[in-house]
Image (cartoon, rainbow, N blue to C red):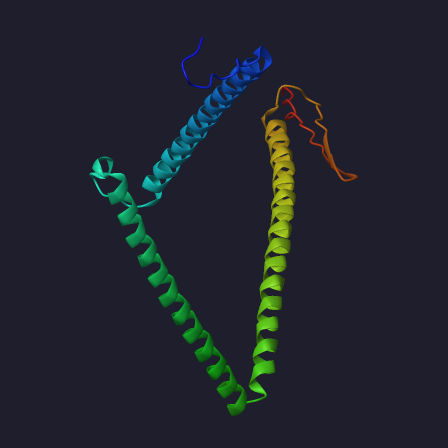
Length: 206
């Protein structure tokens, strides 16, 4: 077949297959890259949403806080951070001023009366000791008062028992010769009461 143009040689089959495999590999690689990018973008948006929710909790938004856009929220957060920095700067300056004033007053006190400072320390130690001694004395006095009250209660109960026994012996007049003996022991001491009741002698007839 003659037409005046140079004809190209036919492409071998293995070259054709390699070209097709290269195209398929590049397409699959592009698809994998797109999937990875979509996953990363999804994670980034989720993290950004979480950060914005935390920022809403930290920044005072007022009653209409749910209507704020992201830009409005970031603007309010910026002003809020600036106010906090100003307050911190003022408080730091005030703290430094108070520290300088304290050092000045301490030096002046030491220069006016150098022996007053250890005396004040001794007074403070004495006050602490007196407070501790008074607390221990109050504890011991409360324990002694409780022990004395318990001993007085026990003695009162013993006297009541003796009085009751005596009253019962006075009331018994049925027998001619009756004796009532009661004993109450407390710590090795024995108390006993004894009473004899005699009847009047009968008069003899004349």
